[in-house]
Length: 147
Image 1 (cartoon, rainbow, N blue to C red):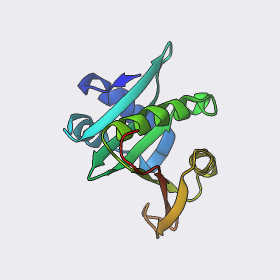
Image 2 (image 1 turned 90 degrees about the vertical axis):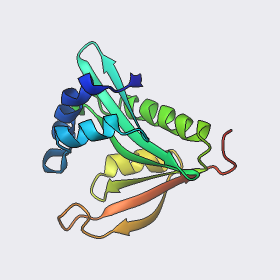
Image 3 (image 1 turned 180 degrees about the horizontal axis):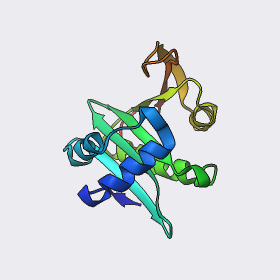
């Protein structure tokens, strides 16, 4: 696992399209996040190329996971958990007391993954994705800053 750079933008954008379809970020938006000084975008590569990625920002004692995706043929193999482990460690190291994220209401697999890691549902954003589907807001709190 390593930090993403400009050379990773096209591969991340392609995985975005594969994972999220019409809700995918454009290559331009991916490039902006990869270059943003407050964002950390991590990629995991394997023999077949990009396997998954996660993006987060940490500020004012909390962290926001703003994206997480794993190649569909590699889901349920532990890649997402590994990416989250590293993102949560970065958040702790930066002094965050909580990690927040949002997930599509209909994404049962992702919601189960997060719940199994201790994230709890704290709210919803109605019609967030430009459809009738809500975004479920989830939070993992550990408190006390860096561990």
